[in-house]
Picture (cartoon, rainbow, N blue to C red):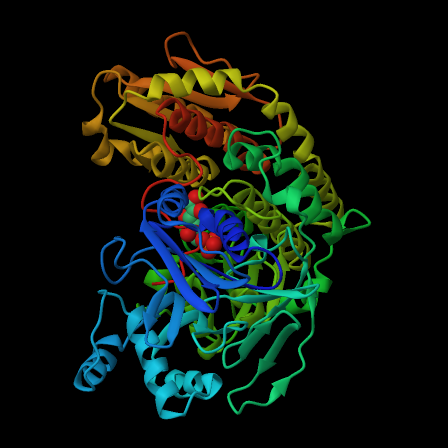
Length: 609
Ligand code: F6R
């Protein structure tokens, strides 16, 4: 969601802010703006729409020229997307950008109105700007004191980049819940919602913690606590390369990220395998510790939750431990039966998803141990959890998650193998065999990626559909949930995933002539049953697209299209079968001319509940 960038240095601030905001576009937004000190006067340009609209406005109104400023991409919460509601917002001496939600903004606004202040927007953000300015005047022009006083009044989540008209060579920053990093280069400093925004300038950064205030100048960044005491913080170095965040010759980030999957799996699992067996000790997980858990909960949102469902099937099958999978926003509010002796696994690409983070905190309060599976280093979920497995997918820019899902399930397999071995549900030989099969999945996936033509053909059949179904049984059903989500989020075609055996209990009535049904049938023990279900929909006019092992050829007339996958262990087939499902979704969206990497209404990092 909203992206923040700030800069002080010798470069052209507007250029730095715009290029940083471009790198944060993937988070999702509906308007954008910047504020730059031009000859010591704050000049603001903001616009509804894309960064291209903002740039067009600058061509007409003039690009602010200076060396310090703040920028923002907004994903509307309070107030419709409009020029007026776009950030930055001002209040007297203060101009700021905000990511998050101010829960008590109405009360604060009433107070400020009673002080004779007026407002120009419908946003909760403007209230914070006005309140900081109110205390700034009351404190005789001390910016940090004004910020601290405001923080005490404000409830909710925020990351803020603030400039004061009286301090043209400073940018101030602070956060609670919403992420913010402080980058440090030579004679320049930055703030950003995530490190990808500043990677082209510096790899060195600090993670700002709640209750810390950063003061940026050309000379560097100083960080203070709420008592205005200077804090010495550990400098981090990003291990992501700038090329990892660029398209590298692919038409879209999504396609690039689909192709990065074999490498991402290798990077994620290789450091966690020793002598052919899983070893998660560096993540805080030992066989002895695993034996303490009698029940496992997996809590996550969207695609990450789907990875959890694959994990449930694999853990229950191999390690014989009950696994509950919950949507984080449901888990939080349904008084979950979680407590001591339970393990709660939180899966998240961004590590900042508000509901997943709160679910993690709740699980800790209830006495459970928590394990986070997270892609973004140093993110809130990574920092809050008891145990942590980083996935090494690199930056995922496309809003539709692909490689992050792939490495999440790879980690779930590794975890399940280690747990099953610890529980004596499988022996060392079997564990070695499974681990080696997991290690070979990148080669299988590379082979599938060589053969994209069929997915393009299938996609061309889907573009005229209003609605379609994904069906499967067992692990195929778990996987089809992800296939369906991928398609609907970027192609805007309605789709649902269904357990194939459940169709005739209601949903089969939806089948009409030529309605596409994507049937995933990779589980050989369930194949006959799935084929019977396929025949049921075929008999009612469905256009069937079958995803199965290459060696399997159903009887003539069962399927209209068939995508053959390499012969492989059934247990690991979700890692292979997800690839054609991702490609089908991708090419359908491309054929429809949609904005593949930035689908409408969606944000990459969902930092509000
Ligand atoms: C879909 C997608 C979302 C995310 C969900 C959770 O392609 O990306 O469904 O999976 O918003 O996000 P993270 O993993 O960052 O917690």
